[in-house]
Image (cartoon, rainbow, N blue to C red):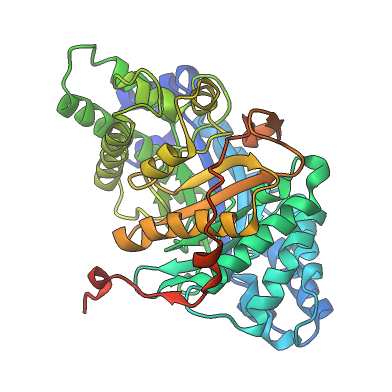
Length: 462
């Protein structure tokens, strides 16, 4: 007999049995249930007052999230790996603070995350794609200290959009912020940078960390859910056999993405119902973990690649990402977030092996980001990489997103004191990875020009 919630959404017994198999044998899970919380009522002229209001708001809104998700896990038998919070970009609360240090707000958010039991809280963020306010500047200045003194707070900064172009002054600022964050957490292999993402075209309903935030057009509180299942997708590909053509493979991926999305939306809607708040979106992204068999890279190799990073990798990733989106879009009318396939290096055992063998370079990884969900993600590079080079990497990735009207991002970790070929280990979902070599060809003159790269002509759609 199917559990009542499955029956209520029209699941057949066969679908329930398939779900059980995917959970038990193919690493299917709900990767994140994230409650988005508006902090716009927390504005004040005192940092201490803002911090107090923020703590009270988050603990009140999220106090039952973990309990509800745990109950749903038990009833449906589907693991919900992460329970998370996203909040209004904190820089929007900072303009009235007169340039004061806003690190105490991060501390208050971290305390609220601990108190509610969530694993991460995103939204210590700023949107500066076209310019910067005093509140934005205060937040940027606080990021290194905030991420080095908190455990669960994550930060994101949007430096470009297809409409506005790329704010190159902000790009250089982020090069400095990344370096300062790396130095502030140098004793932990610069792990602070693992909680910091620089975006172009940031989605404001993304449930995944470290880039989650609660957009200004959202409801007061909302539930967003991120599904995953690279192991399920790999199994579906392998079931087609070695002689199936790529069109057949795409159809198989679409079918399994449909099933995964249905399970994810069920869990998200049930969480929203029990919490008495609105349901937002399902993010369809395939998100790997360091666990063997839970790898996007392995799913790509199942399509016929010898190893990720070689010729054909970008085309295979395009097929995978597109098929996942199509299958998910048929299953839900409320698809959002990033939706596609993540290719973080340290969090994917197959990606790590590709780097170690020399098959995957930073340049090939950048090319693959033109067709995946995000961008250069959890990439560890030498700690002595110049600030201007960090900024140039961000600019290149932003250019891919801006010209193609898609989200791209950089979560790069210059591991202080580490050189190419060494390995860092962060533990947990963050995994570990070899330090990737980087070209020592400078972009100092280009980056230091500053200003704004205008939006591309294809962005003029009105």
